[in-house]
Amino acid sequence: LKNLDVELKEIYSFSIAITKKDDFSVKNKPTFIVAGRLVYRKGIELLLDALSKLDDTLDYECHIVGNGPQFSKLNSKCEKLGLSKKVFFKGRIPFDKMSELYENADALILPSIRETTGSVILEAMSKGLAVITINKYGGAVLVNEQNGYLYGGESKAEYINNLKNTIKNTKILHLQTIWVTIRKSKSLIKSQSNIAKRSLRVCTLAQRKRLKHSVLLVLQNKERSNKSLFKTNLEKSAQ
Image 1 (spheres, rainbow, N blue to C red):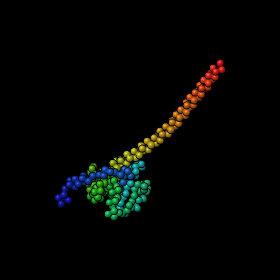
Image 2 (cartoon, helix red, strand yellow):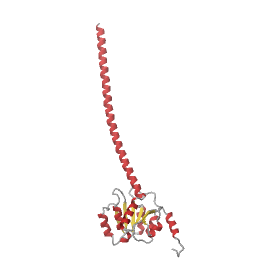
Image 3 (cartoon, rainbow, N blue to C red):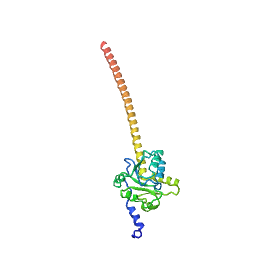
Image 4 (cartoon, rainbow, N blue to C red):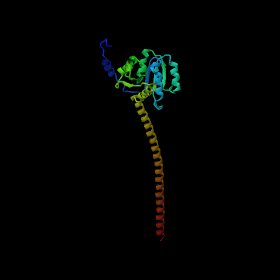
């Protein structure tokens, strides 16, 4: 790049220009995409460990695109960790078919332990996706707080924990949490409204009974009064 008179700050400026999606798909499920060859250095195994530590109530999907020698091992691990309903291995997908996956995703996760530039980062950014990756290699140059999320980690445990926290704290899952809270609140309000309506019906019935009883008393008193008046008039006529 230096031989071509291209400075790193120019690349950095380019990455700033491509910002994260604002219209996160909270109306459905937050969707992450992972794309790359399924080998150890791509960090998919560690990603599964990180996802398994997220709260079970978080509703999301993670689509992993690619083939490789770890395909069967990763699928088995996914099942053992109970992630099969949230993590989906798509196998190899032709490049021209990737656009649809990008369009339906909210963020790219690049969990590589070692990586070069990471051309997949630029592909995801060009589609408006946020990028979640380690604060090293190409990701450290291309990703910033405006277009993604960076995390660190020197040990395996630290890497997994930091990746988990980064995914958990993204706006994508944060908005989903808000959406779930709204749905629960709406459900609670509806439930309370139904209780209020039932109480009102019960109250109305009670009021009707009291009103009916009062009317009957009035009618009975009126009848007694009329009888008494009739008796008095009858006695006066007899005299």
